[in-house]
Image (cartoon, rainbow, N blue to C red; front, side):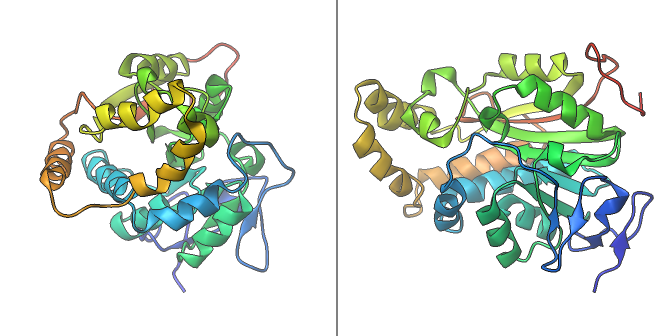
Length: 301
């Protein structure tokens, strides 16, 4: 068994097991090895969403490329860890981080199906709770990620202020979110989204919550037009039932084409810390700023 990571240091290993009582007041470790929060909090996510994603993730070019982009950015903007993946679903991102970065990784996921799939993927540190339910201590988390999570939260400002409360003074946040308001479609409605983002709107909401963006980019630069034609336009004309049947096929990889060169080009830019201006997803890294939202208190500030 791996040694236990503590807030003051310890083994830097993605698979290190962590005593999460060192970070949180609201968690208890159960006999199955999963840490669980107290109470329940509703989330805007389809009940079968994690199962549906689990059937796609391992064969999806989209999920694979997003992971590769995240790892490239993390190498440019590293963390001392541990890394807390909030709302991480089935642990697809957390498993990649667990293998690809030299810090312990903790998955925090409110869905029971996601927790079950994450354990099957070999995640060592799994929390069955929302961020609020976990009751992480003020300024206790060195790195927080939330990947395609914020668009599911009605009050994004409240969520970001809770993230800020938990983040260590020298910590960083890492996030992805769907890009392009003009790309809104029935796929967003079915997924439980409240919004899509632009660089300007994402920067604005981060700064309003007391974060300073260090890096912002987009991903999937060839996909805006196909997404508009395959999802946004059919949704506008009410072709919803047919559209829903086509989602899984849109995740399937084709043969080696020009797209492969585009994915390599995106990864090369991100690996050198260079932003991409066009795409269907936003990616951002931020740290605490000197600005403190009204009514906010943090022991590290």
